[in-house]
Amino acid sequence: PPHHTTPQREESMLSSLTVGRTAGRTLRTGVRAMSIKSSSAKAIWDGPRPAGYPHHIKTIASLQRDQIDSILDMAKDMKASPQKYLKALDQKTLLMLFEKPSLRTRVSLETGMHQLGGQGMFYSLADSPLGKKETIQDTGKVVSRFVDAVTMRVNSRLAVEEMAANATVPVINALDDYAHPCQMLADLLTIAEHKGKVQGLKMAFVGDCQNNMTYDLMRTAVVMGFHINVAGPNSADFEVEWGVVKECEELAKVPGAGSFSIGNSLEEALSGVDVVYCDSWMSYGIASEERAERLKALMPFQVTGASMDLTDKDSLFMNCLPAMRGEEQTADVIDGPRSIVFDQAENRLHAQKALITSLINGFGWRP
Image (tube, rainbow, N blue to C red; front, side, top):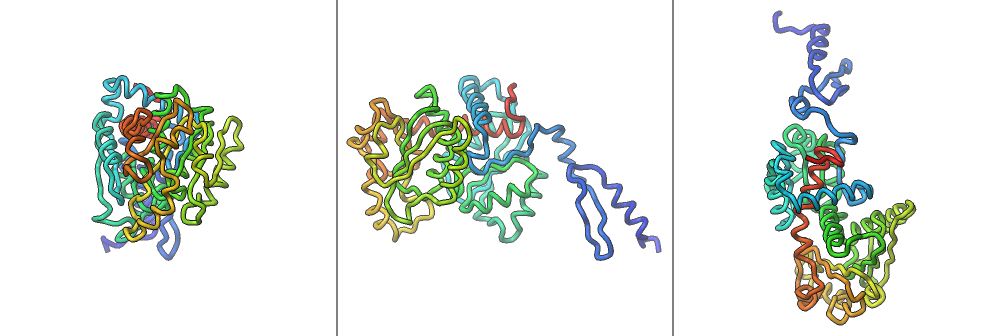
């Protein structure tokens, strides 16, 4: 009959699907396997890609020091001369997946894409949770045919891992329970602006050490060649994950790498350091009934004016925000002359613009 397809004709039809970037996929029919190729038109629109594409950013250690330096150089130029980059991402689209609430991340990403000539598309995972109705594997493959990069602000590192494993466009971790690389780039830019360098400096992070900020600050110190003291309560609930410790030990074997120490003394951690860093003790996801117990354990690590006196006379105070005055730091510290928290917040915009541009156009790209 006219509608009947012989095995020979079927194979011929399949072999005619030759346009696309994903060659060699196998279709199993139950009789035999035949290779087909993607018919995605986006592969034609996109044109040539930079070496190493797609480069996914899971943690700050997804980047090498020279790549971070390149991003920071571009961020400085974008901040000083934004008009040069008005078409840097012309007609490009960034999909922003949000499972956790945000102010700085969403506003800076949407504003940044607009300033670069592209579009940032917000998608709330409260409406369609990842991995529920559709697998993350399928989601990654689908959105790769629509957009040019994906950011994810999610609860679990596993979601970022699976998206990166399946997407064919760059995936950027905009915060999970394991890392916060976008914040790290903004922090490096901010420190460099105030100190002129990051290599060789000493930083202290005090408070809850079992969180994404602690982990990525440790990685940042080792990758970028400075030292960090980490200090928090002597309790399993606040300790750095052992896997992060081992990861940083491996990163520290590279010539010129930085170093880290972990302890339980605020005073020892802050002694003589150039930068003091703390983060919210009541981050998203902390149950209200845990509040009193957490405060009791963490109050010995509150940064006060007196504790800042233990640091270098030209030290800086940092907090990635949101911050609670009277908890992780006192008001006189965060609102005092050493505080650079709002410079940090602004630099999310410039650092992320440079990161996304580098991932899409290639490291070292300039207009």
